[in-house]
Image (cartoon, rainbow, N blue to C red; front, side, top):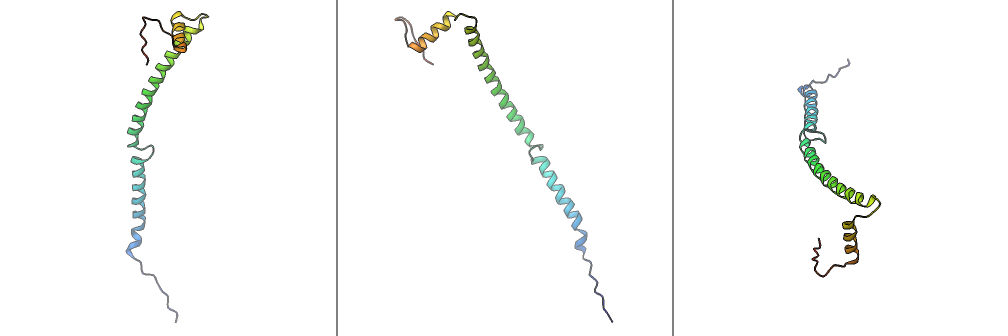
Length: 103
């Protein structure tokens, strides 16, 4: 007579799928908040955007200043003030009654 062995069913097998579902749900929830494009990283991105806007404003102001100086030189003749400023800077000469303020 042959005896057959039957496995005893444990209640643990009923918890495998729900535990896996809960763990995967927690994983996706965590990354929805903390991931690169998550809810909490939005504040970091907005702060970086504000910083970049201020840098853009500074660079734009510098560019406008440089463009203005280039326009002074482009019309074919150098403006007297610009020529005077460049000569004093390069030669280091001043008049007797002039005061030089170095920045």
